[in-house]
Image (tube, rainbow, N blue to C red; front, side, top):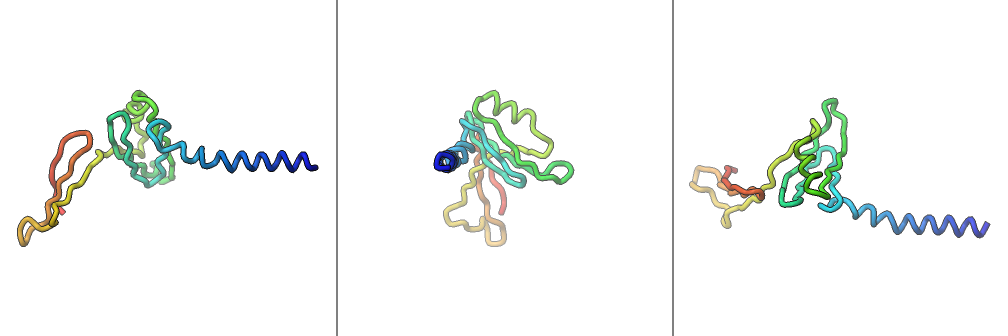
Length: 125
């Protein structure tokens, strides 16, 4: 009986130690990313930054996806063979003018955006 309790205690301790390690091991470029249904996640791996937008599938079912990024080939293959319910968007850095003032008294604010993969532009608020 004592031996059984000891074994069970050791198993519980092992699981308690391993759960944080396994949970923290995902969502890095070295391990890949989980993108849950309805989530948009910025992934910057191997010099290519994209926002992965995971919508529901064609039947409205939620599907969490794994995005492989351990190697350049995996990340590229994912981007070139997207599931139907997954979309790629450019990574954007938005720069708001310091005073955030309208360009004229009746016009909207102008903000500038820079794509992390290159290029820039402006858009209206």
